[in-house]
Length: 117
Length: 112
Image (tube, rainbow over all chains, first blue to last red):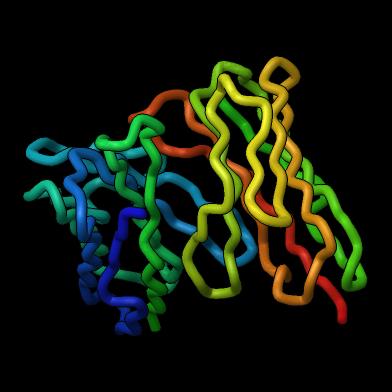
């Protein structure tokens, strides 16, 4: 099956710094990628839909100026958490849709655990 | 707005038991339904995907059924093993290019 990677797998940063998380589709092109956030013992909640070559679509309650998404190529989307604060500590997971498959399967990255001190 | 509910929230069983995890969704107009496994601190592993036109899918000891009209799916795990201990997530999509809506999961513990 298709593979999606995320980098870094974990990051610890000081409050006020910015953190960039990369999501790559390794063996397929993805015009659409999704970014989810998962707080401890909670389910995954969609943050935004990342579309190649256009602006991301954010879910209600997600600050677009704080969570910057760039989908500059068909294999890479980045999520930048700007001026991170402790409440942004979470598990961030991306998914990419492999349009070649008739089932339109979405493949998930392994996630990035962000801890803001 | 689509909502996905999973029952029970947690389940503990002795090794060897057969068990059923339940998932329900409020809007029956789904495109497909997926079951995932998530180990603590890890990402998602896709277990089974059922298209809206299908009734069930099987993989090894796992069997997932879908009753679209009633908005329900079940994941059946046969002869459970300690290695099955994880959180199981159910998710639905309304089209091929839309994000998934997840339930909160069922935390399964299989005791040796």
